[in-house]
Image (cartoon, rainbow, N blue to C red; front, side):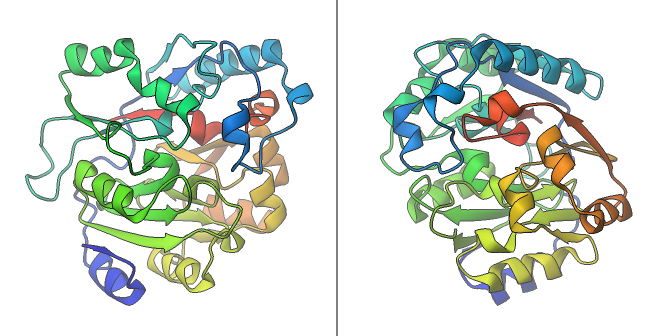
Length: 313
């Protein structure tokens, strides 16, 4: 099912058991912030990006190493070298994603590497990296599904938030993902159902305003949705573990979080510091410990911890 019909999606999703695949990844990959500078193209539709003089390459590199070290205590985490020609490559989850479950062939399908189509040319260069493609294809045996040659933007798990346990997708449409791109991602990930909706004008990626945590909880920022009814419906689907975030929490990247184990949710230190007592209580009630890493230098580029993390399933 691929639909904009909220009621039809919720009715279908309620009957989806958490048997689609593992709720969290078995490993993670990063791309180092080599050549970390303002990407002028990306700044045109990313209101979270700082001005050029706020970029501190040395501090970004240090924090990124700290992130890899911290994540490695939770799950195996590898890091590919960066490239000064691709300053946004520190956010690889928009370009590369993996999947295993498939609504058509079952949970034990051959693992897949999905390569997305980026809106901006500076980011389309990332999809050409033979080392990353080769690692997944040749070392891990992934089937490669390459969406990059087609013209419709589909920035993978930036635009598409996935409940991996139940095979559900939540895809916010913007300049970074159109309806055709969303349909191609839905098929590539093999999802059972995907809900399409418009992001609020000014929002560029769904994963800044919504996080699905290990198939049993969500963090969501209602002001990031063009239609509040979409946020309300998603919250109802995951009740009682739907934690609504305030605008100030969204601005601090609290929605850009990820569960990398069944009992931990990761976000930046900026995001964790901004959490209200109610949000902290809601996360704890859902059975998660908050784990955080300082990433303020990385956040100058308009993304945060979840954007840095590619998942390996």
